[in-house]
Image 1 (tube, rainbow, N blue to C red):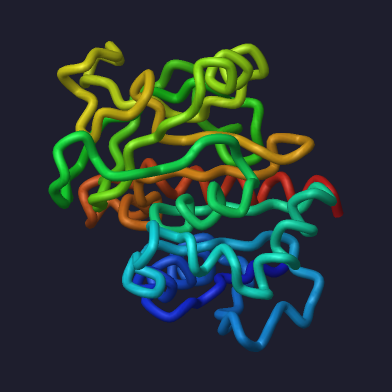
Image 2: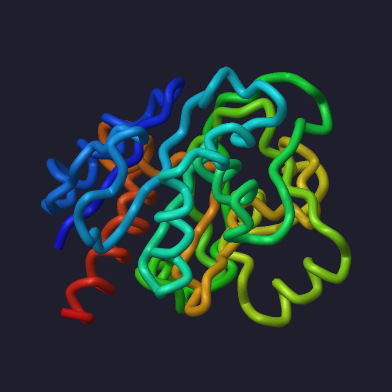
Length: 233
C-alpha cells in the first residue's frame, strides 16, 4: 500500500499530510513533485492544502491544468482514492472530480479556526469510520472555501449520498449562524468518482490527527482510506 502527496508550487501542507499518513497512521507515503509525474501505481493520491501558484486566476485553477492532474483524474475514474484538502479540494473541483466550485468566502476574509462538522455520509472510504450524524471537530483555514453549485447539482448530491460534511454547531444543528464561509447548505465536503472514491473537503484533517492538536477526529479520514485499501488487497 502506498500513498502519494502531490506537491505544487505553493503547496504548504504537503509534509504535514505525509507525516500523518506515514508516522501517525503507519502507511507508506511519497511526496511527488508535480513535474516528475506519478511513476508508480499508487493506491491513494492526496492533493494537499496551500496556495498553489498564489491562487492566481482562481484558487486551484492553474494547478488543475498541470499535466499530473490528467493522471490523477484517470486514477479517480478507475476507482482509485483521491483526497483533496483545502487548496487540494479547489484543485479537485477545478479538475471536475466533484461538481461545483469552492470560491471566495461570503465575507472575503481569511478564516482559520476549529469548526464543528456533521458527518452526513459514512459509507465512503473516507467517512466509513465515523457514525452518520456524528459531530467532529476539524479546523479550517481558507479565504476561498465557500462551496457553490447549482440547485440541480446539490439536489443530486443529496439524493446520491455525496455530501460528506456540513458545518454545524456542537449539537449537530446545521444553521446559517455556524456557516463560516456562506457555503451552499453548509456543505464543506463533497464526494465524487464512480464509487464515491474522491473526497474534496475544505477542513484540514491532518491538523486534527493527534490529541496534542486538540482533536484527533481527522485521523479517521486517513484510517478509513487505509482500511478500504487493505480490503481491496
